[in-house]
Image 1 (cartoon, rainbow, N blue to C red):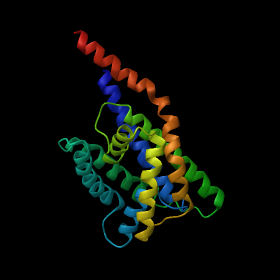
Image 2: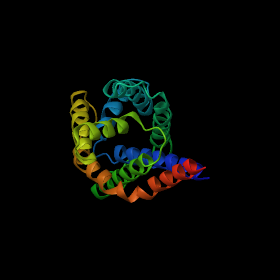
Image 3: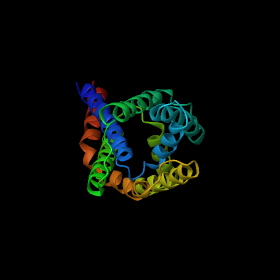
Image 4: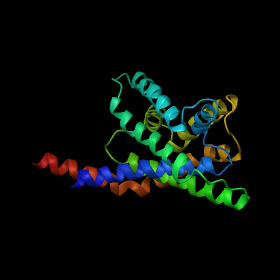
Length: 210
């Protein structure tokens, strides 16, 4: 039962973070750094934003394996596919007609999006299931550099924002805000998801005691 509950939290975290990313894109203030690359490429091809993300995550999966000197974590393709497909679901389905013009609407949608992204990421990372390669890369660099998750995330987002800008992606004030706010928000919300880690720890102890 514990594992089922953890699986539901894992799925919900991925879903909420995908919704958050879609809201940031739809706010018209600029896509998230990594998303700006995928959105920019989707403007010039028939390939969706989510599909580009899946391709990028697959490449990053190999990079993570090289950094850790371990076999590629092919199971990470599961959350990658879930993220890509659910993002497309929101962008091209539920939120397709969302196009705010007023600054307060844009700000509200953006704020909701970045908070949902941070909360979703924090909760799903607390479970024992495979991580999206981008988030796993953050954890790898966090361990290798002894820097906080916020600092590592900020550096990652900054590099992706620059790449997105150079590729002509939708980079704006929102993109810059994601660079400086998403990392600290993940750092802030990560402790809030600690009970999820306790569930996993208790389940392991119970299994070991059998």
